Length: 193
Image 1 (tube, helix red, strand yellow):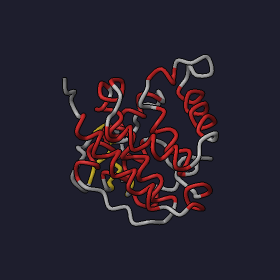
Image 2 (cartoon, helix red, strand yellow; image 1 turned 30 degrees about the vertical axis):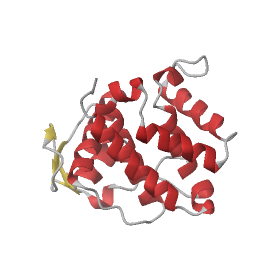
Image 3 (cartoon, one colour; image 1 turned 90 degrees about the vertical axis):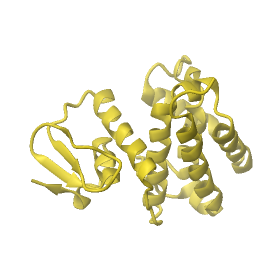
Image 4 (spheres, helix red, strand yellow; image 1 turned 180 degrees about the vertical axis):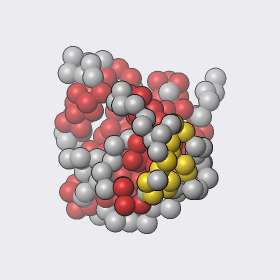
């Protein structure tokens, strides 16, 4: 049985893994990302870890932050090759959990892909289908963080639609989504009206 957005999830994870494979060992282990305190290795551990929802239900989990921290800690026992192999497995054959949550995880992966690319200062062109997934993720984080949207976001590129109420914020679909998800340093790319 195929779930909605399953192909999107595979596509986003494959794009992400292609970038991960292209990194030097130093970039992989020590590179900066837009995720506070996470290296590209840690972002990969998160992508691998989210493929199984049970990773959030372990005794050390029970919250998103604790679950993510446990995934990252556990990955440091693996070599780069082992962790990368797990990443490709999650891209090629997502678990049933991953496939059921593909509508969310495709955006999560697309956003984290941008976190890595932008953090390392690499080109970060975003295909329209990836922008749409990132925008869904940005909106989801607004709800998950229980932060009311006090602005109306107006995307200037394909992939998103105007959303919210209040003073307008204009920008690319990608930049708006990253801003909604709490990434720092994005404000300079946005126009606040």
